[in-house]
Image (cartoon, rainbow, N blue to C red):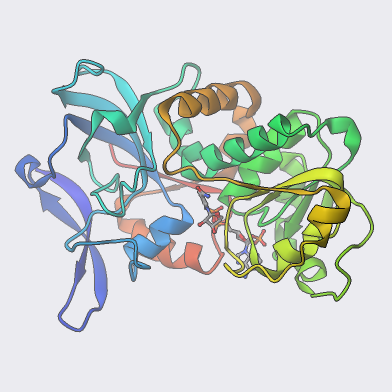
Length: 328
Ligand code: NDP
């Protein structure tokens, strides 16, 4: 028997989540069975613990888009019992049962070996949010962003993606301007390395001007919507914005002027379907550029029982940094 957070849907279509006992034969098919040690809470997890957001196909469902742990059984030559592994993405925790259980069974293709220099707990402090932050920073670097070009903007900075992006960029020598709607997180963001705090309202106001002063040498944007539209017009000539999230909305009420007159680049970032080699590259880079003491400062520890409340909190933008769920 092992414990899992199970989401059920009643006849009226209402979902409810509770911790339940399960047996191994209830797990879905897959080549590798993992004893899950840690998981985490991302924005998507909030949707899957709660109403589903169109992501969950079948109920009962075990959410958890990320997990780390130890292989218990494997029908695939790449993994053997005792191997430490990490999983993010591939629609695990949405279309497939995920990491909010002490055991998970998945396809071997979805796993990566736990990166050297990172513990199973640290891997979940990173999780999809941190992994995506790394993909975003990497994309900006690949498009020529340099520390000497000026400040880099991070939106939704006190959230998971934003916190990790802030810590990585500051550690790599970039000046980081952190956009937050929670002024009380200013000290926290400065402790991660932000040198400037930009109030959310400043970028949420719409403007009729398609171009403003050239201010930012790059941007990791977790917010989207009107904020992304506005900041496109504030980018320096040739600078890039990595579009990661939609915490502020999916619409993009922008003009093409920043692309045409300033050569601004809008880079899409997807963490879910990233090919294996890119995953290894991003995890190796995280081990190199993410300061583990700052990562620890972002962590809020949790258990399976805390997840229904944390799911609601993250949908309201009320989770600071990264949650690490201990399943051991
Ligand atoms: P969090 O909830 O931890 O962070 C989101 C942050 O955005 C909040 O903490 C808040 O930051 C800010 N925010 C929330 N609501 C609003 C709003 N209405 N207007 C402006 N800012 C707002 O989520 P994550 O960091 O885990 O994810 C961030 C986004 O990235 C989500 O949309 C998520 O779906 C997406 N994502 C995409 C991935 C991909 O593969 N492309 C992978 C992972 C996440 P503050 O309080 O500092 O203002």
